[in-house]
Image 1 (cartoon, rainbow, N blue to C red):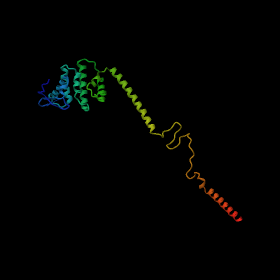
Image 2 (tube, rainbow, N blue to C red):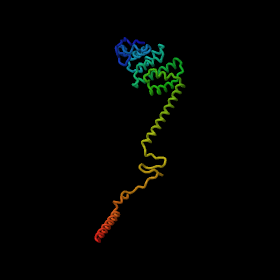
Image 3 (spheres, rainbow, N blue to C red):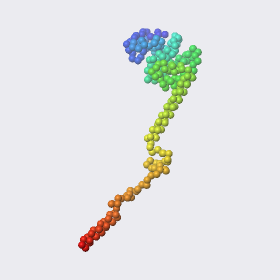
Image 4 (cartoon, rainbow, N blue to C red):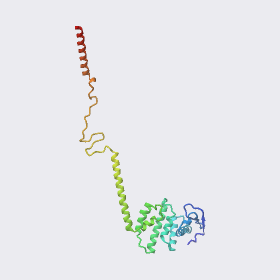
Length: 248
């Protein structure tokens, strides 16, 4: 099965890649920094994947995954391990890596249904792929998606119902808070006592009469009529005093 790989060499570091192969020479290279920590089942799948590149002379990752899966399944290894082999090493900020995992999961479920007579609902598998894999990713846990898929359907539905209820409650609280904020930012909003345009009194309210400009009462000492009367009185008093002095 590994006839396309002519040699395997350990190199100090290959970055995030666990292994590479020269498709023309069949020389494979494994990452000496990360290779020791990879489980043996995953190591086998990775080497089969590189063999797929060399055997089919292809750069297509999904095609190489398919070659590796067929060989892996025939050797009798757990199919879930073939999926974990991918989820351990792929970078899920890359959408193409999601596609590789989804394709591998579809293969595993189809194989179990056809060859192992497992009662697998492929439509349910596809729903979980779309709802979980593409919507939520792996959250940094390579077992997250497998765990989610293997939860019994009724249990998962119960969990999802609770999550939906919690989300609805949170959205209702958010909407109420937004309404309160809007009311606080709009003081000209109508009050229960009546409606009014901004700057105008609401119907039913009592507002003091407004005095037109220039019509306000002036102080008495600035009233011409009063000043004239006072001047006349002063003049009369002065005349009276002068006449009294003359009589004396």
